Length: 143
Image (cartoon, rainbow, N blue to C red; front, top):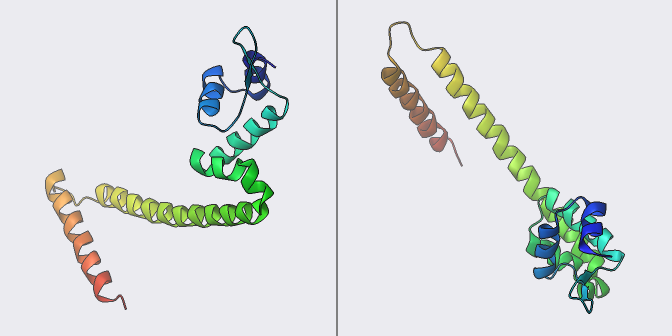
């Protein structure tokens, strides 16, 4: 199939498809007129690549996961290990996001709770001093 039909069927732009081809993730053969001709299985390969990227896999990780020779020689274990590793990365990111959210909410509360008559600069210094104090206390209590 030509690139236009592949783009229509996958929802990807022609330039994205050419990029994946140049990256070695998919293969097309060239017709006599120079047009690319993609086999039917490329539709599924692009769906897998898109899904993998949405799940946070890099193109290099996707290349390793979709490599036909790797799949033939124990790809199941590689796939399973990669998926488990990605879940662990997502869980770590979720923990960081929870911490970031809590810190931002504390900043908002500190700004909203500015004592009457205190200017913004003084309030900022008050908040920073409080955080530094809290950081010092938490460092002293670590094992």
